[in-house]
Image (cartoon, rainbow, N blue to C red; front, top):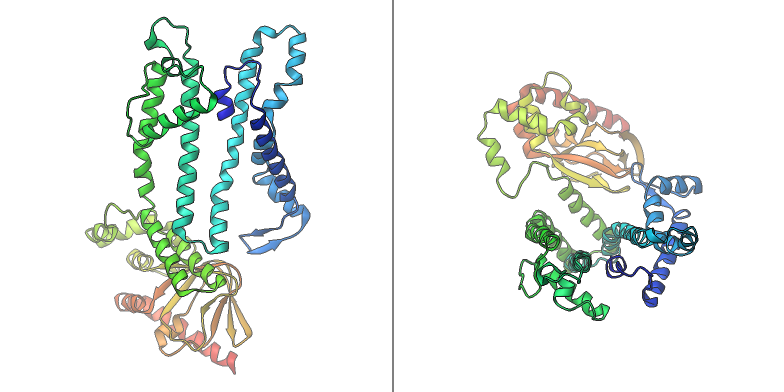
Length: 440
């Protein structure tokens, strides 16, 4: 934005050499990054396996961010303002050249597409080096503020310089000319533009640099609106941020090993992302739904959780009434396990049953794999219904997502819905019998 806006009126395109060198180095780095992406392995999230096949890697990158990276790396401004314009001059198109130069110079804004990498890069650094969530969040906020303010300041200068300085009426001149900044150095103009951007976006607005022309007033109103909504938009994720800061404090205080810390952080991040879409910080959802009749409440849950219900055949089999399905889903707790994590450990107290909605798990007797659990299945009900300790272990064979139902909530459902209780007890007895034969 700086080179586009601050050199907009320079038809000869004589720009600072240091900026040219800096951007050229960045372009070369991104070009190298594009080449490396064609030979860098990636993890297939659907199967949680590392892909090392060169052809698959290339196709994955081509279908992903290749074209964004390519467009953001090509120096359109230099290509289109060098030899091509020399030819245009010879062909007698000199009169249209200034406007054309300005048009292709705006193509440099495509480099802003690179910004999409910033968030993922900071998150990766935070996870890899166990950086305090507060520090990484501060870095993200400061970077975002500087980026947005930089863009706003640059376009504010462009609007001011485009207003012209030849008007006899001072009120109709652009702000750059009104405040006699047109003859100042670039860094002075940039600081003045950034000062206005900061004061406007923070809704302070001292008024020492004010908008007079219709273009300036329109741009100012839009930026004021952005500044006002900025804080309210950011507040929506405040609860999640507070939770993650507590998690990171816990990890640092207990000095958990890196792998264990990753598992803990991944668990809470997944739980935050899996938070129901209808949950709000502005009202108590449970209190609101409890005021409804049981039939209407069940219909609402059946609609809100239709995607989850479709992944669990147990909730659709038999003649299960909507009230049971709604009560069951409302008691679910989402969990995620990485490959190799124990979902259930043999010899531990049974306190939950699980519905597997994504991934694959295995039933183990000691180190022996006895059975595979696929998506849509449920397990863990034997210990919850029949009592005692776990008779087998269940381990995630891939990244696995489950919905957990606590033993306490399960017993509540079994009392409320006897027909479901009979079904689950029969399945538990049959599975316990098979498990006893398998161990023997």
